[in-house]
Amino acid sequence: MFPDKGAWDVKVPLGEHFGFDKSDPETDPSWGYLSMSNGGGMFYDVIGNFQYGVMMSDFGVSQDVALSASHVSSAGNPDPQDDAVVRLGYEFRGLHPDDFNSQDMYSFLTSSQTLAVLQDAQRYVPPSS
Image 1 (cartoon, rainbow, N blue to C red):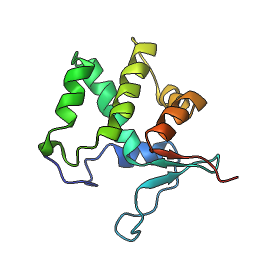
Image 2 (cartoon, rainbow, N blue to C red; image 1 turned 90 degrees about the vertical axis):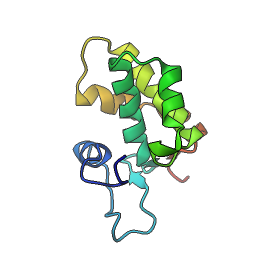
Image 3 (cartoon, helix red, strand yellow; image 1 turned 180 degrees about the vertical axis):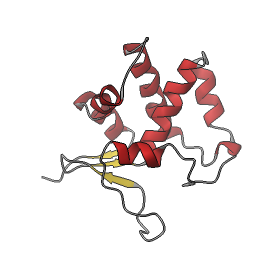
Image 4 (tube, one colour; image 1 turned 120 degrees about the vertical axis):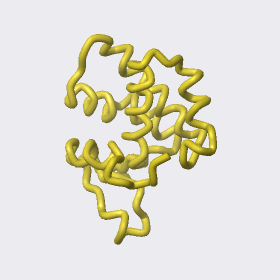
């Protein structure tokens, strides 16, 4: 069990790598959303849950088992709405069975299809009209 928002957390360096605008969790009480270039906002935890799906797929863990494991109380803050994001990690890995790079990952995470899934899961807020 690792503490939330620790230096180990893959969300932090991946978010920075992708250039998402993220405020400091220590000074921002609304910590949780990444500002995107399209004007929308993605829930910060998307990156970690997506990566979890990718890693569990790589480890040969079935999607059902990975989802069940993410629901136990020792997993941090289990949230069934994160299931859609974990499934996206599995979907992404299925599209890239041999290899992928950060641009592949970024393109998938910011595609209209993925953003629609994230919006349905309340993990993405589209740009205001």
